[in-house]
Image (cartoon, rainbow, N blue to C red; front, top):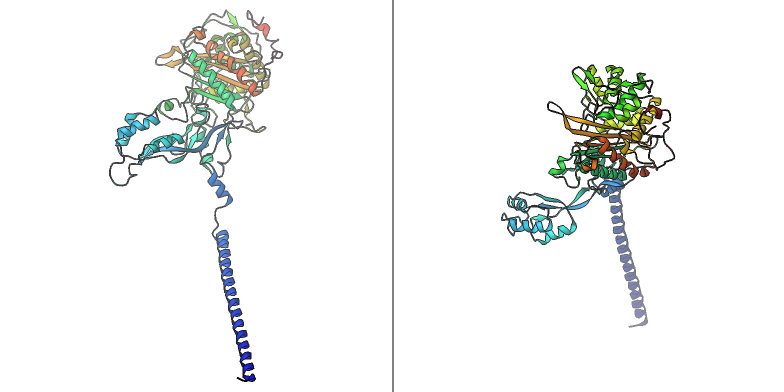
Length: 574
């Protein structure tokens, strides 16, 4: 090969190599561009998908995600934020006969054996009932509110048909306290009886259930009221008791109790029998607690304009009926003496002078002719005679017979009696400062001031002595009314009530304590009247709740009685 040919071959090889490199670079660049294009396409698809989800088909919002985290039912608290009712996760015991799915027996062991094992876990359950329930082959709850450790023991039995599903349960941390205020939640998830029923829609609404509902109740005061009522009821073998603590300026119910109570955590036959609310749903003739209301109406009307005036205290015979006192109180009494010694005869004469039209109007202004004003669904309708009252009815209403109302009616009336004369509806919802219902005037302010003096005198010198808690300036009136029955009043069946307020130099709270059919026991010196059983309940309760409500005992101050004390002849006032 010559030099020329060799040189040509070398040049040709170099050209071919350059061409091969260029093709390789082009191929590599093309592959990179294809890969980048694929990634770009995927990124565009992802962005389009995100846009679709965010704009055209929006996903869960922050609100909806928060809603999913909320309990299924809102919380109820007392006025200070103490939880009274709340929802929490729990377990239940469910019987599922079809769990094995083979059409055979739903249980490996016999129903009796399984029932016995369940009773070892839940000693309060009945083994016979359980055995029968397991044998009938019907699905359903065997038990609600199963603890986690109990659920583990159920699963350890080894029966597939025994399931322990997780559910949301309603729990009342304070047990039976304020049961008649709260009510309970039934198996269908809706409230019954009390504020659970009233607030049902609000507590279930996702828009509002995140905010706890604050009631007017003070759990400390509620606990003290229930404790003292229970003590008083048991000490005199009464069949029931009722009580209320009411703010006289706002109408807020600080405590409301009806005994015997029920446990909203466990609704059974015994609990259902005790759901009737004696404070708001049962009407009673409340006896002599009406006498201060009669006197206030008479003062307002100008019928009583001289408290020193004396009224005959002899028996009255009207329309074939005899009005008498339980004991001889002398030949005559003035108004302060009438209230201190609780004379039916003098109260009837004052009501008679007031007359049926004005007497009925005064009672109607206190709403004694309609259901009590409160949020609870159970509200009793008073026994109220329509039309013109005859003379005898006017006189008997003057001392608390002939009209039947609830203890809540009486509490609202006494609040108006002592707060300057303004009647307001009561409420179980917390009232923010400055937002109390305006109410309406039923007594003159001067009349209210005079009644505060008279109520204080009853606690100092009269039938309310056992309610006079030192330093708390309690005032009030006893009432012992025979219950009506077939053929007339039952002499040995009494409703004993003490209606009171404190402190009387600046009344802030009304307290009502009532006992249904108290018996004469050693604890009441074998007496059945309110002076011996209901008044002592208030005397013990007020020192317990006063400091909690900002009322401290003070022996240096009291309402001025200097102008009335000389009118009370032969009493400790002298």
